[in-house]
Image (tube, rainbow, N blue to C red; front, side):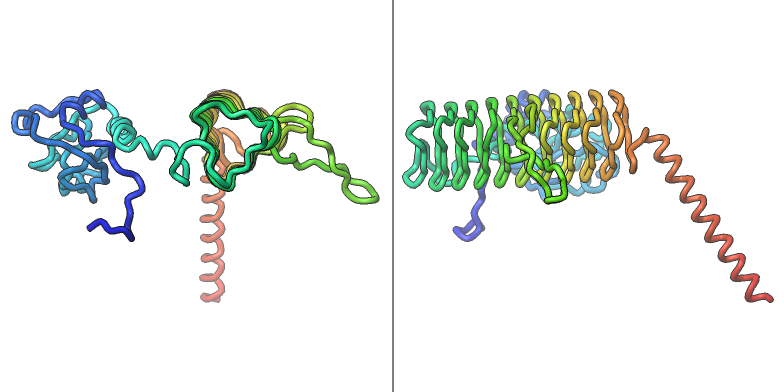
Length: 365
């Protein structure tokens, strides 16, 4: 039972009929139950196979999930052709080519509020308690929550949200339909349209640069900017340093997870995916559609080619060609890395075998 102490933070916009669902995901109702189901089933939620109820849509896209499919109580299951026979009675099967992608498409239509953080104060316009400098320029339709600060000369496009406690520095440009999350800071930066910064993101602070000497470490001026292109999303507590002499650039459509560190002068191409706890050192360059797994380390000045994929926890110390899959420390072609791992395992087994034989020999002596 729903109570005030147990709120739902995202609610469905409406229920969908089976016909609407099929049209939305490009699927078809499986032949066997079609007459029984058409026009009678409406769904208004999403859930896993195990948790779904009669009002929910779920999906299944792998043989290992067949037992869960046979036991599901969902109203509708998005499924591939080969698993239709495993759908239990009472569950409408909608056949699609890519069940997970179809499930995501339906989820986006059902819960659009989950796709972009909203004003935490729940109102539009500039709230009382926000501090917007008289020389800042805000287009109509900008929302600034209490406690946010917008500096002189900053420009913010229509439809954008600056959440509570966020800071937009002097001269910063924020495009249209952006979200600057709670407590985020944007300095020395230009943001395109539809950029999402989650809570605690830090954009445009000093790069880490010093010259050592007998008297200590002299700070190197960092006079570049951060350029964030359209449709970029940056996860909570990620930091992106401004450039030293040239700009730090995040390419169009790139998605960056939480807790990522991107140093000064880094250039990241379009539609890259960078997973949590990755660190990219200064002046590294990533091409388009590069994917970095969690906890990858990239040293400074290396280049990673278009479409390359780097396995989690790898350390990239050399240039990476386009379109390859590398892993390990130092990172190398995946096949070579696997060979090395297997060779080390064989040596370890041989060493253990030698040790056991020596122990047996001592016992028998």
